[in-house]
Length: 439
Image (cartoon, rainbow, N blue to C red; front, side, top):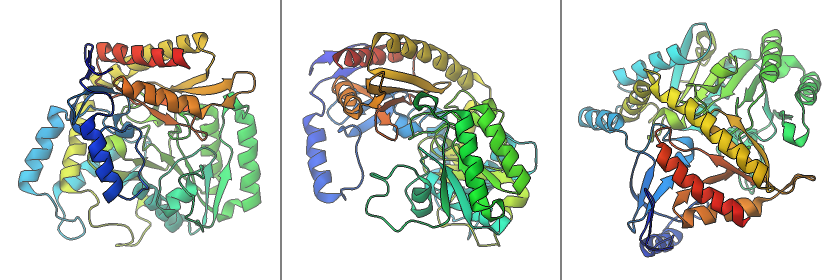
């Protein structure tokens, strides 16, 4: 495949190339084993939807750094904002010497988050930190201990976030004991015969078993990310909202992967008519810099005592400047219109593939946040994770970066930057389709 050149993809070496292989050897010698690599390629630079590796190869990115660079790699507005802020103040620590960027970003998030009520925000560094702090806020507000999460959920890798996460391996293996007072409810998964009614009954039974007066929070992804891009049906979210309102339970929407245009609206909750009490942002919020947020009802956000939540780097000035620039890129609606168009176009292609390739059992998602589930047999719906791994390898060897997902690792998720061109998408999909033919 070395020497291949199409419109955007340029392969000067086999993938991985010699410099990437050399760096991987250094990585194995110097870096802890834990972090995984979906693609064995070391990046030199990137722009838009294109990644240039250290060997001079050019790959089309359909992963966006796990849904982070929704606005594309190195967009001019972000680079400009980051440079300008770095020349003024790189670090101040909001807990020590506050600065306007933190406040301005909170004001923007309060205005943009769903829900017609007074809001406040808190800034941290990562999605897992947002999750951890949302649980602290809910417990401080309610004075209750218990939290309900859902099957197939992913909420992060720190201890509370990891406990809330559904999948055991690799996220929890070797790290027990986990946090107490966390309970698991079924999530609607129509393809595997978990209907809305079944999930509602399961949730109601769990609520009764624990006792509503013991439950501080229910946390849900409006569109599950690592779980395989499962959108929560509107009627299920409506029922959750009713239960939580009735019993004074804090309802938390984890929009860490589904937020910032990934589904065609700034937050997926907007499309689903969902008004959570707290909403969590990260990933696409910073456009590539580490920043996260908890935004929600002012009275809930103010529940922890002063000093009860915080951190040295939370809402870093440079990251906050980048996040404000990200919000600026969504301001006129053009990027969201593009996202909606991409969602319609890509879904049509995936449904065509499902008709043609028996290995695809299901296609699902919301807007351009789409995935397809690979199975060994459509009748039994047995998961086929080996096919997903093979497709990832086939694609990166031919210049396209994709990611797997799902509780059984048998889904392929598409997280392309929303600025990807029609030509780049078509070129990448030619490679994907060729890979499906080999399966």
